Length: 609
Image 1 (cartoon, rainbow, N blue to C red):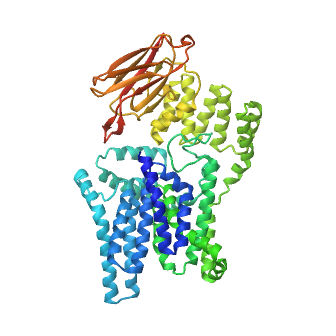
Image 2 (image 1 turned 90 degrees about the horizontal axis):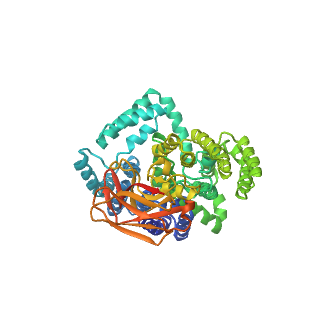
Protein backbone atom coordinates (compact mmCIF):
# COMPACT_ATOMS: atom_id res chain seq x y z
CA UNK A 1 0.00 0.00 0.00
CA UNK A 2 2.81 2.40 0.89
CA UNK A 3 4.58 1.64 -2.42
CA UNK A 4 1.33 2.26 -4.32
CA UNK A 5 0.93 5.60 -2.53
CA UNK A 6 4.46 6.64 -3.50
CA UNK A 7 3.85 5.67 -7.13
CA UNK A 8 0.65 7.74 -7.13
CA UNK A 9 2.46 10.69 -5.53
CA UNK A 10 5.11 10.71 -8.22
CA UNK A 11 2.44 10.26 -10.88
CA UNK A 12 1.08 13.62 -9.72
CA UNK A 13 4.69 14.77 -9.25
CA UNK A 14 5.11 14.75 -13.03
CA UNK A 15 2.65 17.65 -13.06
CA UNK A 16 5.03 19.52 -10.73
CA UNK A 17 7.80 18.98 -13.29
CA UNK A 18 5.51 20.40 -15.98
CA UNK A 19 4.92 23.46 -13.79
CA UNK A 20 8.68 23.79 -13.20
CA UNK A 21 9.41 23.88 -16.94
CA UNK A 22 6.44 26.17 -17.58
CA UNK A 23 7.54 28.58 -14.84
CA UNK A 24 11.14 28.83 -16.07
CA UNK A 25 10.41 28.82 -19.81
CA UNK A 26 7.10 28.07 -21.55
CA UNK A 27 4.41 25.45 -22.09
CA UNK A 28 6.38 23.43 -24.65
CA UNK A 29 9.32 23.17 -22.28
CA UNK A 30 6.94 22.21 -19.48
CA UNK A 31 5.52 19.33 -21.51
CA UNK A 32 8.98 18.05 -22.47
CA UNK A 33 10.16 18.39 -18.86
CA UNK A 34 7.25 16.25 -17.66
CA UNK A 35 7.97 13.70 -20.39
CA UNK A 36 11.65 13.48 -19.41
CA UNK A 37 10.67 13.04 -15.74
CA UNK A 38 8.27 10.23 -16.63
CA UNK A 39 10.87 8.41 -18.76
CA UNK A 40 13.95 8.85 -16.55
CA UNK A 41 14.63 5.37 -15.10
CA UNK A 42 15.98 6.38 -11.64
CA UNK A 43 12.97 8.59 -10.92
CA UNK A 44 10.59 5.74 -11.81
CA UNK A 45 12.69 3.35 -9.72
CA UNK A 46 12.56 5.49 -6.60
CA UNK A 47 8.85 6.11 -7.12
CA UNK A 48 8.17 2.37 -6.82
CA UNK A 49 10.33 1.88 -3.72
CA UNK A 50 10.04 3.03 -0.12
CA UNK A 51 12.56 5.84 -0.21
CA UNK A 52 12.12 9.48 0.81
CA UNK A 53 13.60 10.65 -2.49
CA UNK A 54 10.21 10.74 -4.23
CA UNK A 55 8.76 13.12 -1.67
CA UNK A 56 11.94 15.17 -1.43
CA UNK A 57 12.36 15.55 -5.20
CA UNK A 58 8.72 16.51 -5.73
CA UNK A 59 8.90 19.13 -2.97
CA UNK A 60 12.32 20.37 -4.12
CA UNK A 61 11.10 20.94 -7.67
CA UNK A 62 7.98 22.66 -6.32
CA UNK A 63 10.05 24.95 -4.10
CA UNK A 64 12.36 25.94 -6.97
CA UNK A 65 9.31 26.79 -9.06
CA UNK A 66 7.98 28.99 -6.26
CA UNK A 67 11.35 30.69 -5.82
CA UNK A 68 11.36 31.66 -9.49
CA UNK A 69 7.82 32.97 -9.22
CA UNK A 70 8.81 34.94 -6.12
CA UNK A 71 11.79 36.43 -7.96
CA UNK A 72 9.52 37.64 -10.76
CA UNK A 73 6.60 38.83 -8.63
CA UNK A 74 8.45 40.00 -5.52
CA UNK A 75 5.52 38.72 -3.45
CA UNK A 76 6.16 37.97 0.22
CA UNK A 77 3.23 35.54 0.11
CA UNK A 78 5.00 33.44 -2.54
CA UNK A 79 8.18 33.62 -0.43
CA UNK A 80 6.18 32.34 2.57
CA UNK A 81 4.82 29.47 0.48
CA UNK A 82 8.28 28.65 -0.86
CA UNK A 83 9.57 28.51 2.72
CA UNK A 84 6.82 26.07 3.68
CA UNK A 85 7.59 23.78 0.74
CA UNK A 86 11.35 23.88 1.44
CA UNK A 87 10.52 23.06 5.08
CA UNK A 88 8.53 20.02 3.97
CA UNK A 89 11.42 18.97 1.74
CA UNK A 90 13.80 19.30 4.70
CA UNK A 91 11.60 16.96 6.72
CA UNK A 92 11.72 14.44 3.88
CA UNK A 93 15.52 14.66 3.64
CA UNK A 94 17.59 16.84 5.96
CA UNK A 95 19.78 18.11 3.09
CA UNK A 96 16.93 20.44 2.17
CA UNK A 97 17.45 22.29 5.45
CA UNK A 98 20.73 23.79 4.23
CA UNK A 99 18.97 25.24 1.20
CA UNK A 100 17.14 27.77 3.40
CA UNK A 101 20.18 29.93 4.36
CA UNK A 102 21.46 29.71 0.78
CA UNK A 103 18.17 31.04 -0.56
CA UNK A 104 18.24 33.77 2.09
CA UNK A 105 21.69 34.88 0.93
CA UNK A 106 20.48 34.84 -2.67
CA UNK A 107 17.57 37.09 -1.73
CA UNK A 108 19.82 39.49 0.15
CA UNK A 109 22.38 39.67 -2.67
CA UNK A 110 20.64 42.60 -4.49
CA UNK A 111 21.39 44.72 -1.41
CA UNK A 112 25.07 44.65 -2.38
CA UNK A 113 24.32 46.28 -5.72
CA UNK A 114 21.20 48.29 -4.83
CA UNK A 115 21.73 50.11 -1.57
CA UNK A 116 18.37 51.89 -1.58
CA UNK A 117 16.28 51.58 1.56
CA UNK A 118 13.35 50.24 -0.42
CA UNK A 119 15.44 47.40 -1.91
CA UNK A 120 16.88 46.51 1.47
CA UNK A 121 13.46 46.52 3.14
CA UNK A 122 11.94 44.37 0.40
CA UNK A 123 14.78 41.85 0.48
CA UNK A 124 14.55 41.57 4.28
CA UNK A 125 10.77 41.11 4.02
CA UNK A 126 11.19 38.24 1.56
CA UNK A 127 13.82 36.56 3.75
CA UNK A 128 11.58 36.97 6.80
CA UNK A 129 8.59 35.49 4.96
CA UNK A 130 10.70 32.60 3.70
CA UNK A 131 12.00 31.88 7.20
CA UNK A 132 8.53 32.08 8.74
CA UNK A 133 7.14 29.64 6.18
CA UNK A 134 9.94 27.15 6.85
CA UNK A 135 9.64 27.60 10.63
CA UNK A 136 5.90 26.99 10.49
CA UNK A 137 6.54 23.52 9.04
CA UNK A 138 9.78 22.54 10.76
CA UNK A 139 9.00 24.13 14.14
CA UNK A 140 6.47 21.54 15.40
CA UNK A 141 8.84 18.69 14.51
CA UNK A 142 11.73 20.43 16.29
CA UNK A 143 9.54 20.96 19.37
CA UNK A 144 8.54 17.30 19.35
CA UNK A 145 12.20 16.29 19.11
CA UNK A 146 13.10 18.54 22.03
CA UNK A 147 10.37 17.04 24.17
CA UNK A 148 11.45 13.49 23.34
CA UNK A 149 15.25 13.88 23.22
CA UNK A 150 15.76 17.04 25.33
CA UNK A 151 17.95 18.49 22.59
CA UNK A 152 17.37 20.74 19.58
CA UNK A 153 17.01 18.43 16.56
CA UNK A 154 15.67 20.42 13.64
CA UNK A 155 15.23 17.56 11.17
CA UNK A 156 17.22 14.39 11.87
CA UNK A 157 20.50 13.25 13.44
CA UNK A 158 22.25 11.63 10.47
CA UNK A 159 24.44 14.54 9.38
CA UNK A 160 27.26 14.13 11.89
CA UNK A 161 27.31 10.36 11.54
CA UNK A 162 27.41 10.57 7.72
CA UNK A 163 30.24 13.09 7.90
CA UNK A 164 32.21 10.85 10.26
CA UNK A 165 31.75 7.84 7.99
CA UNK A 166 33.19 9.95 5.17
CA UNK A 167 36.43 10.43 7.15
CA UNK A 168 36.94 6.87 8.42
CA UNK A 169 40.32 5.49 7.33
CA UNK A 170 40.14 1.80 8.28
CA UNK A 171 37.77 -1.00 9.23
CA UNK A 172 39.19 -1.07 12.75
CA UNK A 173 38.47 2.66 13.16
CA UNK A 174 34.96 2.13 11.81
CA UNK A 175 34.17 -0.66 14.28
CA UNK A 176 35.66 1.24 17.24
CA UNK A 177 33.83 4.43 16.27
CA UNK A 178 30.50 2.66 15.86
CA UNK A 179 30.88 1.14 19.34
CA UNK A 180 31.70 4.55 20.75
CA UNK A 181 28.65 6.11 19.10
CA UNK A 182 26.35 3.25 20.13
CA UNK A 183 27.25 3.91 23.76
CA UNK A 184 25.61 7.37 23.50
CA UNK A 185 21.86 6.94 23.91
CA UNK A 186 20.79 10.52 23.11
CA UNK A 187 20.59 10.94 19.34
CA UNK A 188 21.57 14.61 19.37
CA UNK A 189 24.57 13.90 21.60
CA UNK A 190 25.49 11.04 19.31
CA UNK A 191 25.45 13.40 16.34
CA UNK A 192 27.62 15.93 18.20
CA UNK A 193 30.13 13.23 19.08
CA UNK A 194 30.19 11.96 15.47
CA UNK A 195 30.76 15.50 14.20
CA UNK A 196 33.63 15.99 16.64
CA UNK A 197 35.18 12.66 15.59
CA UNK A 198 34.88 13.73 11.94
CA UNK A 199 36.54 17.10 12.61
CA UNK A 200 39.35 15.37 14.52
CA UNK A 201 40.01 13.13 11.50
CA UNK A 202 39.96 16.08 9.11
CA UNK A 203 42.37 18.15 11.21
CA UNK A 204 44.67 15.15 11.63
CA UNK A 205 45.08 14.79 7.85
CA UNK A 206 43.44 17.64 5.89
CA UNK A 207 45.20 16.72 2.66
CA UNK A 208 43.73 13.24 2.70
CA UNK A 209 40.28 14.69 3.34
CA UNK A 210 40.57 17.01 0.33
CA UNK A 211 41.72 14.14 -1.90
CA UNK A 212 38.80 12.03 -0.74
CA UNK A 213 36.45 14.90 -1.54
CA UNK A 214 37.55 14.68 -5.15
CA UNK A 215 36.87 10.94 -5.26
CA UNK A 216 33.45 11.34 -3.62
CA UNK A 217 32.45 13.99 -6.16
CA UNK A 218 33.52 11.62 -8.93
CA UNK A 219 31.46 8.89 -7.28
CA UNK A 220 28.45 11.20 -7.08
CA UNK A 221 28.52 12.06 -10.78
CA UNK A 222 29.94 8.77 -12.08
CA UNK A 223 27.94 6.33 -14.19
CA UNK A 224 26.03 3.53 -12.51
CA UNK A 225 27.58 1.14 -15.01
CA UNK A 226 30.83 1.61 -13.12
CA UNK A 227 29.50 -0.77 -10.47
CA UNK A 228 29.53 -3.53 -13.07
CA UNK A 229 32.90 -2.43 -14.40
CA UNK A 230 34.62 -2.71 -11.00
CA UNK A 231 32.36 -5.43 -9.58
CA UNK A 232 30.94 -3.58 -6.59
CA UNK A 233 27.33 -4.45 -7.42
CA UNK A 234 25.66 -4.86 -4.05
CA UNK A 235 22.05 -5.92 -4.40
CA UNK A 236 21.71 -7.62 -7.81
CA UNK A 237 22.35 -11.33 -8.37
CA UNK A 238 23.98 -12.83 -11.46
CA UNK A 239 20.62 -13.21 -13.22
CA UNK A 240 19.74 -9.53 -12.70
CA UNK A 241 17.25 -10.23 -9.91
CA UNK A 242 17.42 -7.93 -6.85
CA UNK A 243 18.42 -9.69 -3.63
CA UNK A 244 17.01 -6.78 -1.61
CA UNK A 245 15.01 -3.68 -2.41
CA UNK A 246 17.53 -1.11 -3.61
CA UNK A 247 16.22 1.58 -5.95
CA UNK A 248 19.76 2.67 -6.82
CA UNK A 249 20.80 -0.53 -8.62
CA UNK A 250 19.35 -2.30 -11.66
CA UNK A 251 20.22 -5.16 -13.95
CA UNK A 252 22.89 -4.31 -16.52
CA UNK A 253 20.56 -3.55 -19.45
CA UNK A 254 18.47 -1.11 -17.43
CA UNK A 255 21.61 0.44 -15.94
CA UNK A 256 22.95 1.17 -19.42
CA UNK A 257 19.66 2.82 -20.42
CA UNK A 258 19.67 4.92 -17.23
CA UNK A 259 23.25 6.04 -17.84
CA UNK A 260 22.56 7.02 -21.45
CA UNK A 261 19.59 9.08 -20.21
CA UNK A 262 21.77 10.65 -17.52
CA UNK A 263 24.52 11.63 -19.98
CA UNK A 264 22.06 13.10 -22.47
CA UNK A 265 20.09 15.04 -19.84
CA UNK A 266 23.22 16.48 -18.22
CA UNK A 267 24.86 17.60 -21.47
CA UNK A 268 21.59 19.12 -22.72
CA UNK A 269 21.08 20.85 -19.35
CA UNK A 270 24.58 22.35 -19.44
CA UNK A 271 23.71 23.82 -22.83
CA UNK A 272 20.32 24.90 -21.46
CA UNK A 273 21.89 26.91 -18.63
CA UNK A 274 24.10 28.67 -21.15
CA UNK A 275 21.24 29.28 -23.61
CA UNK A 276 18.81 30.82 -21.10
CA UNK A 277 17.71 34.32 -22.07
CA UNK A 278 17.90 35.29 -18.36
CA UNK A 279 20.68 33.19 -16.80
CA UNK A 280 19.94 34.62 -13.35
CA UNK A 281 16.76 32.53 -13.19
CA UNK A 282 18.89 29.39 -13.11
CA UNK A 283 20.72 30.46 -9.93
CA UNK A 284 18.43 28.61 -7.43
CA UNK A 285 18.90 25.35 -9.34
CA UNK A 286 22.67 25.90 -9.47
CA UNK A 287 22.68 26.67 -5.74
CA UNK A 288 21.01 23.32 -5.05
CA UNK A 289 23.44 21.47 -7.33
CA UNK A 290 26.42 23.09 -5.61
CA UNK A 291 25.00 22.38 -2.14
CA UNK A 292 24.28 18.71 -2.92
CA UNK A 293 27.76 18.30 -4.39
CA UNK A 294 29.40 19.86 -1.33
CA UNK A 295 27.38 17.75 1.12
CA UNK A 296 28.26 14.60 -0.78
CA UNK A 297 31.94 15.58 -0.79
CA UNK A 298 32.20 16.23 2.95
CA UNK A 299 30.02 13.33 4.11
CA UNK A 300 29.85 9.69 3.09
CA UNK A 301 29.43 10.65 -0.57
CA UNK A 302 26.05 8.97 -1.09
CA UNK A 303 25.23 8.62 -4.82
CA UNK A 304 21.50 8.87 -3.98
CA UNK A 305 21.97 12.66 -3.98
CA UNK A 306 22.51 12.46 -7.73
CA UNK A 307 18.84 11.78 -8.48
CA UNK A 308 17.65 15.08 -6.92
CA UNK A 309 20.46 16.83 -8.82
CA UNK A 310 19.40 15.41 -12.18
CA UNK A 311 15.75 16.16 -11.36
CA UNK A 312 16.40 19.93 -11.30
CA UNK A 313 18.31 19.68 -14.59
CA UNK A 314 15.28 18.42 -16.51
CA UNK A 315 13.71 21.78 -17.54
CA UNK A 316 17.06 23.06 -18.77
CA UNK A 317 17.60 19.90 -20.84
CA UNK A 318 14.04 20.22 -22.12
CA UNK A 319 14.68 23.84 -23.13
CA UNK A 320 17.67 22.80 -25.25
CA UNK A 321 15.64 20.02 -26.89
CA UNK A 322 12.81 22.39 -27.74
CA UNK A 323 15.24 24.89 -29.22
CA UNK A 324 16.97 22.20 -31.28
CA UNK A 325 13.64 21.05 -32.71
CA UNK A 326 11.89 24.40 -33.20
CA UNK A 327 14.64 26.93 -33.74
CA UNK A 328 17.96 25.12 -33.95
CA UNK A 329 19.89 27.97 -35.56
CA UNK A 330 19.41 30.05 -32.38
CA UNK A 331 21.40 27.46 -30.47
CA UNK A 332 24.53 28.21 -32.48
CA UNK A 333 23.92 31.97 -32.36
CA UNK A 334 23.55 32.01 -28.57
CA UNK A 335 26.43 29.65 -27.87
CA UNK A 336 29.02 32.03 -29.24
CA UNK A 337 31.85 33.49 -27.24
CA UNK A 338 31.42 33.35 -23.46
CA UNK A 339 28.27 31.22 -23.42
CA UNK A 340 29.73 28.72 -25.82
CA UNK A 341 32.98 28.57 -23.86
CA UNK A 342 31.04 28.02 -20.63
CA UNK A 343 29.06 25.18 -22.23
CA UNK A 344 32.24 23.52 -23.50
CA UNK A 345 33.97 23.81 -20.13
CA UNK A 346 30.91 22.43 -18.32
CA UNK A 347 30.64 19.50 -20.73
CA UNK A 348 34.36 18.70 -20.41
CA UNK A 349 34.20 18.76 -16.61
CA UNK A 350 31.22 16.42 -16.65
CA UNK A 351 32.85 14.03 -19.11
CA UNK A 352 36.02 14.03 -17.00
CA UNK A 353 33.94 12.88 -14.03
CA UNK A 354 32.33 9.94 -15.85
CA UNK A 355 35.24 8.67 -17.97
CA UNK A 356 37.41 5.94 -16.43
CA UNK A 357 39.98 3.44 -17.66
CA UNK A 358 38.27 0.81 -15.51
CA UNK A 359 35.68 0.34 -18.26
CA UNK A 360 38.28 -1.04 -20.69
CA UNK A 361 38.96 -4.52 -19.21
CA UNK A 362 35.30 -4.87 -18.29
CA UNK A 363 34.19 -4.09 -21.84
CA UNK A 364 36.83 -6.48 -23.20
CA UNK A 365 35.41 -9.32 -21.09
CA UNK A 366 31.74 -8.79 -21.94
CA UNK A 367 31.62 -10.94 -25.07
CA UNK A 368 33.11 -13.87 -23.17
CA UNK A 369 30.68 -13.28 -20.28
CA UNK A 370 27.60 -13.22 -22.51
CA UNK A 371 28.79 -16.26 -24.46
CA UNK A 372 29.54 -18.16 -21.27
CA UNK A 373 26.20 -17.28 -19.70
CA UNK A 374 24.37 -18.34 -22.87
CA UNK A 375 26.21 -21.68 -22.88
CA UNK A 376 25.43 -22.14 -19.18
CA UNK A 377 21.73 -21.56 -19.84
CA UNK A 378 21.92 -24.32 -22.47
CA UNK A 379 23.73 -26.63 -20.00
CA UNK A 380 26.76 -26.71 -22.28
CA UNK A 381 29.13 -26.75 -19.33
CA UNK A 382 32.32 -27.28 -21.34
CA UNK A 383 31.72 -24.20 -23.50
CA UNK A 384 30.51 -22.21 -20.49
CA UNK A 385 33.68 -23.00 -18.55
CA UNK A 386 35.87 -22.04 -21.50
CA UNK A 387 34.16 -18.69 -22.00
CA UNK A 388 33.81 -17.80 -18.32
CA UNK A 389 37.43 -18.66 -17.56
CA UNK A 390 38.46 -16.48 -20.47
CA UNK A 391 36.39 -13.62 -19.06
CA UNK A 392 37.98 -14.14 -15.65
CA UNK A 393 41.48 -14.10 -17.16
CA UNK A 394 40.72 -10.83 -18.97
CA UNK A 395 39.39 -9.13 -15.82
CA UNK A 396 40.52 -11.11 -12.74
CA UNK A 397 40.06 -8.20 -10.31
CA UNK A 398 36.31 -8.04 -10.93
CA UNK A 399 34.38 -10.10 -8.32
CA UNK A 400 31.55 -10.62 -10.81
CA UNK A 401 33.80 -12.82 -12.91
CA UNK A 402 34.56 -14.95 -9.86
CA UNK A 403 30.83 -15.25 -9.18
CA UNK A 404 30.34 -16.44 -12.78
CA UNK A 405 32.65 -19.37 -12.11
CA UNK A 406 30.88 -20.08 -8.82
CA UNK A 407 27.55 -20.22 -10.68
CA UNK A 408 29.12 -22.60 -13.18
CA UNK A 409 30.19 -25.08 -10.49
CA UNK A 410 26.82 -24.76 -8.77
CA UNK A 411 24.98 -25.59 -11.98
CA UNK A 412 27.08 -28.75 -12.28
CA UNK A 413 26.26 -29.79 -8.74
CA UNK A 414 29.80 -29.28 -7.42
CA UNK A 415 28.67 -27.40 -4.32
CA UNK A 416 32.03 -27.45 -2.54
CA UNK A 417 33.79 -25.78 -5.50
CA UNK A 418 30.94 -23.28 -5.83
CA UNK A 419 31.28 -22.36 -2.15
CA UNK A 420 35.02 -21.75 -2.56
CA UNK A 421 34.40 -19.28 -5.41
CA UNK A 422 31.50 -17.54 -3.64
CA UNK A 423 33.74 -17.15 -0.59
CA UNK A 424 36.51 -15.70 -2.75
CA UNK A 425 34.08 -13.24 -4.40
CA UNK A 426 32.80 -12.21 -0.97
CA UNK A 427 36.36 -11.52 0.17
CA UNK A 428 36.93 -9.36 -2.93
CA UNK A 429 33.70 -7.38 -2.34
CA UNK A 430 32.27 -7.97 1.13
CA UNK A 431 29.19 -5.82 0.39
CA UNK A 432 27.99 -8.17 -2.36
CA UNK A 433 24.76 -9.57 -0.96
CA UNK A 434 24.57 -12.19 -3.70
CA UNK A 435 27.97 -13.75 -3.02
CA UNK A 436 27.36 -13.66 0.74
CA UNK A 437 23.88 -15.18 0.41
CA UNK A 438 25.12 -17.93 -1.92
CA UNK A 439 27.91 -18.55 0.55
CA UNK A 440 25.22 -19.18 3.18
CA UNK A 441 23.11 -21.40 0.93
CA UNK A 442 25.98 -23.59 -0.25
CA UNK A 443 27.34 -23.86 3.30
CA UNK A 444 23.88 -24.87 4.47
CA UNK A 445 23.77 -27.68 1.92
CA UNK A 446 27.25 -28.87 3.00
CA UNK A 447 26.26 -28.55 6.69
CA UNK A 448 28.95 -25.97 7.50
CA UNK A 449 27.30 -23.90 10.23
CA UNK A 450 30.25 -21.58 10.90
CA UNK A 451 30.57 -20.68 7.21
CA UNK A 452 26.83 -20.07 6.93
CA UNK A 453 26.80 -17.93 10.08
CA UNK A 454 29.71 -15.83 8.78
CA UNK A 455 27.93 -15.19 5.47
CA UNK A 456 24.64 -14.19 7.09
CA UNK A 457 26.45 -11.98 9.61
CA UNK A 458 28.21 -10.21 6.72
CA UNK A 459 24.83 -9.44 5.12
CA UNK A 460 23.42 -8.20 8.40
CA UNK A 461 26.50 -6.06 9.02
CA UNK A 462 26.11 -4.11 5.79
CA UNK A 463 22.38 -4.50 5.13
CA UNK A 464 19.61 -5.95 7.24
CA UNK A 465 18.61 -9.57 6.81
CA UNK A 466 14.88 -9.29 6.24
CA UNK A 467 12.07 -10.68 4.16
CA UNK A 468 13.45 -9.42 0.85
CA UNK A 469 16.50 -11.66 1.43
CA UNK A 470 14.24 -14.53 2.56
CA UNK A 471 12.03 -14.22 -0.53
CA UNK A 472 15.01 -14.08 -2.85
CA UNK A 473 16.64 -17.13 -1.23
CA UNK A 474 13.35 -19.05 -1.45
CA UNK A 475 13.33 -18.64 -5.23
CA UNK A 476 17.09 -18.88 -5.78
CA UNK A 477 17.79 -22.17 -4.02
CA UNK A 478 16.15 -25.29 -5.45
CA UNK A 479 18.49 -27.99 -4.11
CA UNK A 480 17.04 -30.99 -2.18
CA UNK A 481 16.16 -30.43 1.49
CA UNK A 482 18.53 -32.42 3.67
CA UNK A 483 17.33 -31.46 7.15
CA UNK A 484 14.14 -32.39 9.00
CA UNK A 485 14.40 -29.34 11.31
CA UNK A 486 13.83 -25.78 10.11
CA UNK A 487 14.46 -22.74 12.32
CA UNK A 488 13.44 -19.42 10.73
CA UNK A 489 16.34 -17.00 11.01
CA UNK A 490 18.94 -19.74 11.34
CA UNK A 491 21.62 -19.59 8.60
CA UNK A 492 21.30 -23.34 8.04
CA UNK A 493 17.63 -22.82 7.15
CA UNK A 494 17.99 -19.87 4.72
CA UNK A 495 16.05 -20.49 1.52
CA UNK A 496 13.46 -22.65 3.27
CA UNK A 497 11.31 -19.91 4.77
CA UNK A 498 9.78 -16.60 3.62
CA UNK A 499 7.25 -14.10 4.87
CA UNK A 500 9.12 -13.28 8.09
CA UNK A 501 10.25 -10.07 9.79
CA UNK A 502 13.94 -9.48 10.57
CA UNK A 503 15.34 -10.88 13.79
CA UNK A 504 13.88 -9.21 16.88
CA UNK A 505 15.43 -8.83 20.36
CA UNK A 506 12.54 -10.63 22.10
CA UNK A 507 13.31 -14.01 20.46
CA UNK A 508 16.36 -16.13 21.12
CA UNK A 509 15.27 -18.53 18.38
CA UNK A 510 12.96 -18.15 15.40
CA UNK A 511 11.28 -15.17 13.75
CA UNK A 512 7.93 -13.42 13.68
CA UNK A 513 5.76 -13.90 10.60
CA UNK A 514 4.50 -10.89 8.64
CA UNK A 515 1.00 -12.32 8.61
CA UNK A 516 1.47 -14.83 5.78
CA UNK A 517 4.56 -17.03 5.96
CA UNK A 518 5.61 -20.23 4.27
CA UNK A 519 8.16 -22.87 5.20
CA UNK A 520 9.57 -25.59 2.97
CA UNK A 521 10.28 -28.82 4.89
CA UNK A 522 11.39 -32.35 4.08
CA UNK A 523 8.36 -34.59 3.63
CA UNK A 524 7.64 -37.64 5.75
CA UNK A 525 4.92 -40.18 6.38
CA UNK A 526 4.86 -39.12 10.02
CA UNK A 527 4.06 -35.78 11.65
CA UNK A 528 5.04 -32.16 11.24
CA UNK A 529 5.34 -30.24 14.51
CA UNK A 530 5.43 -26.43 14.80
CA UNK A 531 6.50 -24.61 17.96
CA UNK A 532 5.12 -21.08 17.99
CA UNK A 533 3.71 -18.29 20.09
CA UNK A 534 1.37 -15.38 19.40
CA UNK A 535 -0.64 -12.82 21.37
CA UNK A 536 -3.40 -14.42 23.40
CA UNK A 537 -6.65 -14.86 21.46
CA UNK A 538 -5.10 -14.54 18.01
CA UNK A 539 -6.18 -17.24 15.57
CA UNK A 540 -3.20 -18.77 13.74
CA UNK A 541 -3.96 -20.93 10.69
CA UNK A 542 -1.67 -23.78 9.58
CA UNK A 543 -2.14 -25.36 6.15
CA UNK A 544 -0.23 -27.78 3.89
CA UNK A 545 -0.11 -27.18 0.14
CA UNK A 546 0.18 -30.88 -0.74
CA UNK A 547 -2.79 -31.87 1.46
CA UNK A 548 -6.30 -30.55 1.87
CA UNK A 549 -5.32 -29.76 5.42
CA UNK A 550 -6.08 -26.66 7.45
CA UNK A 551 -5.97 -26.20 11.19
CA UNK A 552 -6.87 -23.09 13.19
CA UNK A 553 -5.25 -22.66 16.59
CA UNK A 554 -6.16 -20.02 19.17
CA UNK A 555 -2.94 -18.60 20.63
CA UNK A 556 -2.51 -18.52 24.39
CA UNK A 557 0.26 -15.94 24.49
CA UNK A 558 2.75 -18.62 25.54
CA UNK A 559 4.86 -21.15 23.64
CA UNK A 560 2.62 -23.74 21.95
CA UNK A 561 3.09 -26.75 19.71
CA UNK A 562 0.78 -27.90 16.93
CA UNK A 563 1.18 -31.26 15.17
CA UNK A 564 0.01 -32.00 11.63
CA UNK A 565 -0.09 -35.50 10.13
CA UNK A 566 1.50 -35.99 6.71
CA UNK A 567 0.60 -39.67 6.45
CA UNK A 568 -2.01 -39.11 3.75
CA UNK A 569 0.41 -37.40 1.34
CA UNK A 570 1.12 -39.29 -1.89
CA UNK A 571 4.72 -40.47 -2.19
CA UNK A 572 5.55 -39.48 1.37
CA UNK A 573 8.11 -42.28 1.63
CA UNK A 574 10.36 -40.53 -0.92
CA UNK A 575 10.55 -37.39 1.30
CA UNK A 576 9.14 -34.85 -1.16
CA UNK A 577 9.31 -31.18 -0.22
CA UNK A 578 6.30 -29.96 1.75
CA UNK A 579 5.20 -26.34 1.99
CA UNK A 580 3.64 -25.28 5.28
CA UNK A 581 1.75 -21.98 5.33
CA UNK A 582 1.12 -19.98 8.49
CA UNK A 583 -1.35 -17.10 8.37
CA UNK A 584 -2.78 -14.85 11.05
CA UNK A 585 -3.86 -11.27 11.80
CA UNK A 586 -1.02 -8.85 12.59
CA UNK A 587 -0.24 -6.04 15.00
CA UNK A 588 2.66 -3.65 15.57
CA UNK A 589 5.36 -5.47 17.53
CA UNK A 590 7.52 -2.64 18.95
CA UNK A 591 7.65 0.80 17.36
CA UNK A 592 11.15 1.50 18.70
CA UNK A 593 13.01 -1.81 18.48
CA UNK A 594 10.96 -3.86 16.01
CA UNK A 595 8.63 -1.63 13.93
CA UNK A 596 6.90 -4.40 11.98
CA UNK A 597 3.36 -5.69 11.87
CA UNK A 598 3.76 -9.32 12.90
CA UNK A 599 1.52 -12.34 13.35
CA UNK A 600 3.07 -15.33 15.11
CA UNK A 601 6.58 -16.11 16.33
CA UNK A 602 7.68 -19.42 14.79
CA UNK A 603 10.47 -21.06 16.81
CA UNK A 604 11.02 -24.25 14.81
CA UNK A 605 9.40 -26.80 12.50
CA UNK A 606 10.32 -30.47 12.85
CA UNK A 607 9.25 -33.49 10.79
CA UNK A 608 9.38 -36.95 12.33
CA UNK A 609 9.23 -40.41 10.65
